Amino acid sequence: MRRVGLAVLALLVSVTVAALVYDFATAGESRPPGELYSGPIVRVGDTLIAYRRWGTSGSAVILLGGAAEPSWVWHRVGQLLAARGHRVYAIDLPPFGYSQRRGPYTMAHWIALVRGFDRRVEIRRPLIVGHSLGAGVAAAYALASPRQVSGIVLLDGDAVPFGHGIGWFSHLLVFPYFPALFRLATGSDWVASRVLRNAWGAGHPHFGDRILDVFQRPFRVQGTEAALKQLAGGGIPGVPLSDLRGLRVPRAVVWGAHDTVDSLSSGRATAEALRVHIRIIPHAAHLSMLANPQAVALAIERESRIAAPRRT
Image (cartoon, rainbow, N blue to C red):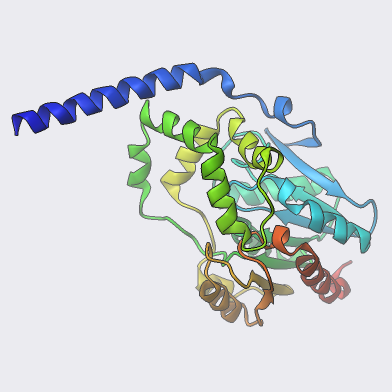
């Protein structure tokens, strides 16, 4: 037992020293958002919000991504919707993408940021599309301010809370282990490729340096490590199914046929609560906007036509 104890102690000391060395060696790699992303960026309250835009006229569509998704994921859907006569804005919800890492990372704060963004870019009653984590924000926004949206689309996101009750886990994310593990994982091409293959689906492209950099670079934004730890402590905010039943705005649930990140069964439960039929995107997994952008754009366009008569 003494030998085992000494071996465990030696291993712990070795891992700790290695983590400390790696932490200090990589400490200067984080950068302010403006050094990693050329814009556009707009100030909403005391937070700098990064976004992308397509189209110059027509009804407004706001696209909200999920966890660890930069607004780049919407580039094909944004182009397609703009070609159909919409003004499209894809927002980086903090602490993801290139928006400033300024919390709290709560539903109330996310809603305030989206509402403030609407005012800053001067759009009224947009159709809000939320993917994965963003689906909860879209639903919560519509519940809180139904007159300020023309409708919502929940894309591969059931909108319900996730991870609540495991706040103790964030206490395990301590220095020097968490920073070292975070930087190793987010800088690993192997890890990024595995995650993307699962989320993109069977028809995924070759993940070369360009695509991998799109997803890895946002993790270098200053404050990301602390922000993710804070988010993990509270879990992913969302809307309970019982509250979803109270939504009265035009709404749709759209899902990748082969999504294994958020199960199709959870999508059906949300669709049932909203009293709508789920729309299935063929040849797509969780990142359906990348796997089948044409079908996703058509589903959003269909909902925009349904919501159009309610606009003022």
